[in-house]
Length: 277
Image 1 (tube, helix red, strand yellow):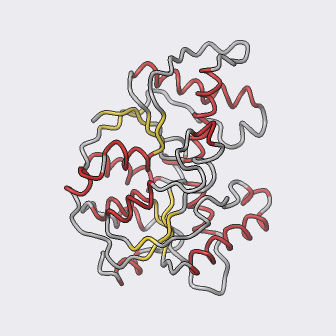
Image 2: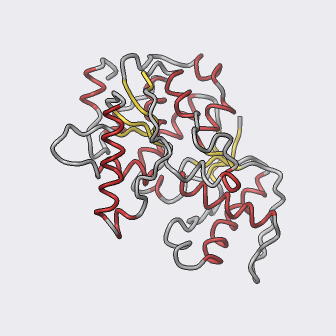
Image 3: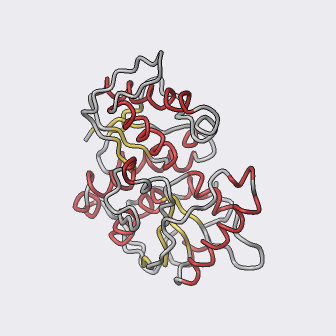
């Protein structure tokens, strides 16, 4: 299976472990990720807070490159996914600002990485390659707010209760706990501008995860993972925050140690306690 791939800036920088684990997992599952040639930053989040036409133009340029590949596009970062989806809607509605000459047919889909692995790669292909299950690992899946809402932009099937991450983790054998905070906001880039507000929001998420009986959190967004990894309140045992591809890679037999050392909250003691490392 071949698919175009947009890593975005984070997966080449602050979230290298997400990028590396995504590429390794894809290779193990027989997926060839064709990174967009000469891609650029999508504008999240500084551009769309500054100039809407600039933000659109940055994202739209990437969609023009995608169109030339003749392939669907997989996007791991939630913020990148939403910026590209917003540009897609404007391009399809022919609402381009003056001077923007991007050609976009709309013949191919933009896919968020968890949805791609669950729906396109599929349960059968993943199950066939599992080397060890994540038995005993109690977790909650955190989607954040950007991939499901507003559904008229994201095309989310279940904007209030997305399920791809839950189904993936259950397939791997994890004990996935139900909770009602899977799409609550983590504070996003308020961690830089309003850290007190962000700390309150991430603290609430961590508290509710513990209340659900979780020992860790699974995320699929560099900013969400970073906020939860750094912003949990002091005085309680912090919950490790995994990228979903790290746990998927662990179950597929990939050498996960090379990713896990980059976390602020070291997840390796928990995995060793569960005899997963």
